[in-house]
Structure formats: C-alpha cells, structure tokens
Image (cartoon, rainbow, N blue to C red; front, side, top):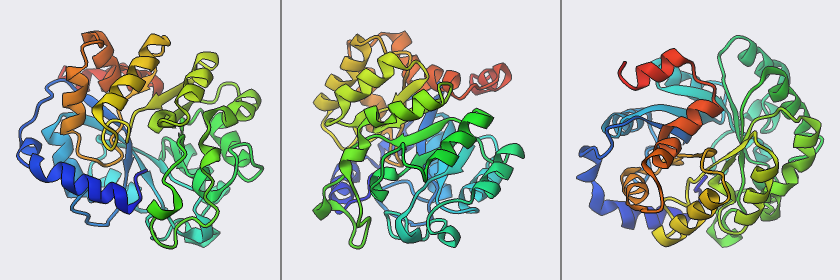
Length: 312
C-alpha cells in the first residue's frame, strides 16, 4: 500500500503526462491485478473509485482484480456492481479502527474483522481472499497470537492470504496520525516461517515482494515454501525501472518466475505494462506468467473462467 505524501506527489508528477496513454490500451492479452484496494477517496493521483477502476480495467484488459476492503460493505458493493471483475477480502488490522489512509477500518471491532462474521463470509462465498494484512502498520509479527485465528481460518477454508511484505514508509512519509506502532521490521518475509510451519498448506502472497530491503528474504522464503507467491506492486511504479528490472530478474534467476504476479496497488498501469514488455531478459512465456497465468494458478481459477478471460 502506498499511503504517504511522497508517493502521492511522485504519482502526480509521473502520471500527469500519461493521461492519453490511459485511453490507448497497450495490452491485448488478459491481465489479473492481484493488489487493488476498494476506496471512496476520489483521489486524482490513483484509481480510487469504482468508475475509474472499471474504466482502467477495460482500457488495459484487466479481466480480474483481487480487491481488499477496510469494512464490511465497500468491497462487496464493488463486487455486486461488477461481479465478474473482482474477488474480495478484508484488509486489517488497523490501529484503533483507523486505516493508514485515515478512514474507518472495521471500527466496530477496533480494527479487526470479527472471526465469526468473517467465517460466514467465506462459507457463503461472499469473500474469497484475506488481506492485505497490515501487521507492519500495527507493529506486530505475523506470528502474533492476535493473528493466529485468522491464519487458522484461512487454512481451514483454503483462503489465499496477502500480506504487506515491505518495510514501508518512514515516519515523516506517513500520513499525519497514521500508525503510531508502525514497525517496518515486521515486513520481513522470513517472519512468516512460524506461520507456515503451523499451517503448511497456507497460500500466501507477498505484496510488494519484500520491496528492496527484504528482497533477499522474500526469495529465501519462496525457495523453501512453494505455496508462497509475490506481487511486484510499488516496485513496478514508485521505484525507478532499473530497480524493478533488477529485482524481478533476481526472482527469475532464482527459479521463481512461475510465482511472480502482477499488482498495481491502485496505481495506473500503463507504464508497468510498458516496463514488463521492455525487459529483454523476460521470455514471452514469463511475461504471460506474470500478467495472468501465475495468478490463475495461485487463486485456482476454473478452466471455464480462464477460457472466458481469453475470449473463448
């Protein structure tokens, strides 16, 4: 999640000049965006409301987005408006019931969705994933007792879990009032080892792929746990292309090209597509894996859904 003023300023500079590109699709084959947030902020710098998100998905042939919501209703409303475009889940925990972008987050339970309610959502097919888990912002390890019931629930129903795997913005770059217990060290992917040892079949994807600080740790965890995937969100937009290129190449050379997924974190994706298509070290198959196939495998899409996404 990009929540700080630096990110917003950077995006404003970077994306002011690509408005035309947003109406000129560059991607004919389907894309799955595994990192999207349902908000109603109306930001001009990111795709933050349903109409702009749906238009952007149409422009770039994003056939499915994995959507997180910070309350009981917003993500569901988006899915009800476009049922074939989203799979949804809750984002939490939020300190004092306040999301890092400073709006209410499961306020009725101090920033945590109630387990009994959440189980009903999964049993009824109302929700499909869990995350983005924000324990970095909350200042606790993923193995903390407070999180265990949620991982247990995810394991019970075979629910994929997305976690914020990055050290996050420094204090001066966070929104005023955000996250008094923030601890970037909690974003180390290796801290997930006790969770994966307890729940060996749990499917986890590392949102932001460990970013720069925890890049090597992300690779180490993924090499020993085949059910752990990663997305490259923020690395593919906020960071310079050369950093995105290097870190992605590291994943590929580590033999992890079949577990890297495409994620936007609500940032316009035109430049991301251009970057991936320009990286000569990627084969066409590896690009297709990143844009679509890896996510289709991770989220266990049906053959019928995959065929529909490819116009068959």
